Image (cartoon, rainbow, N blue to C red; front, side, top):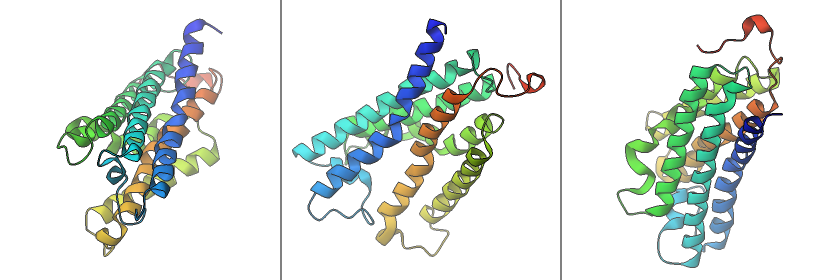
Amino acid sequence: MPAPRRFDRAALTLGLGVPVLYFLTQGVIGVLTPGYSFRQQAASDLGVGDSARALVFNLGAVSTGVLAAVAAYGFAAAPRWSPVPAVRARLTALAVASTGAAAIAAGVFPLPDPRHGGGPIGAGMFVIPLLMATLLWRVASPWARAYLVLNLALFAGCAAMLSGSTPVDQVANGGLLQRLLAVTVFGAIGIGCAIVTATRPDSVRSDSVQVGD
């Protein structure tokens, strides 16, 4: 295996840790924070203040962003050895890098700093479920395809509920809805890394392999 391929796969392997670190950090810190409600409060509330718990949470957010940036490189480089479409792989890489930048900004600038989350720089996260589905569809197993479809449906449902277009109480369920939405984004990054890492140049018929879109 050529050295670049080993490095590319290592980047995607590290990307598997994006959803793990994201949810593990807030899960542990949330449990240790008196009065915190996973159902009502957003994850970012855990990073407010000068406590040691807030510092650990913010460091976790920054680390999550760094792992996402590494994963973005893996997606961009994947077409060199994987049958994923090159253009879609690079678009996905940009969206993953955008998500990583947003996570880093969230940790570096805790609430109520207006720079929290990076603003427009993090917009790429909102297209990750769709980009992952289009990128991986040809190389995914039937079970993985089912996940991609369900993930898109969950993303659309969460977006509708958070927009206020459904009768769901956003105040009472804001934290839960935010976490469900995060599952569709950060979870898709991890699953995408796993699927691309498992592909081989001959994993699809040669007449269906394309260099680009």
